[in-house]
Image (cartoon, rainbow, N blue to C red; front, side):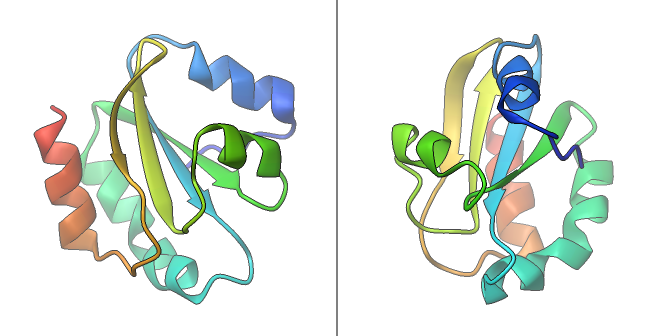
Length: 105
């Protein structure tokens, strides 16, 4: 999981080639903490994707611009264009995330 150091680095992933999963999270989010231990497995099972963690509190303007108000949420871009989103306030399981990503492959 890539954690951008600043907004410029985050922006570089928006425009990159290939499929990029933006995982919106926050330190205080219990549902985010629930899924974090499974993220390395999710990444390993989905090698066609680059995973970028976006701390919603650090990048609130990005979350607003992308209409991400519930976390944890995932927005997937391919070559700079959105191809899918799993955005809501509900807890997400490893299986649900893998099924979501499988639809985008």
